[in-house]
Length: 253
Ligand code: SF4
Image (cartoon, rainbow, N blue to C red; front, top):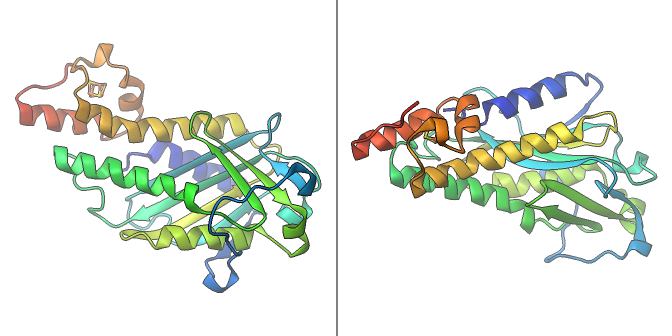
């Protein structure tokens, strides 16, 4: 089942709207260096901020199980690269991971839904463990924004989105069951970052649905808070129906 299909379709459409986008195939030798832990960059040492308050910002990580989609390991840049930016600007970093079949289980049993939820959470949490040198990332789980302070020194040393993308890609590709990974950096101020943030919220809600169904939510769709998700995402109803059938009850549509 392609649970994140609506979000992925919108991202594919957005990417296609930018024929002048830059694409870089994964190259492990071109990674930007990392520090071992979170490094504080003082405002006086920063050239600018990406996704600072007052500018657009969004961040999400979603997965695809569809055969033949998102199969290349690459970084896509839409808008200016880091060395072309002079002042605070809008920013989004979006990640799509192609997973091996079966990594999420069949999502029709309690055990496999638990497995799916924990796998998706683990993949999302990778962002908290990547510390690129001179690139201080602050991610908000509540607002679905990612804000970055870019150090002057890192710019002098030639930091680029291609190198950063390779650094992130290495972390994602190390996870067992991740077949391919795409990292998309967006800085074009013309992009609708509010729409991307709404999609980030949707990704979160879809992931949460796995655990909510496990917790035992109402079986009447007309009063269920997850109805907007189930209306939009193919397979969610089957997920709940499948569980209730096992327990002898079916949700009321
Ligand atoms: S199938 Fe109905 S009851 Fe079950 S989660 Fe979706 S909207 Fe809620």
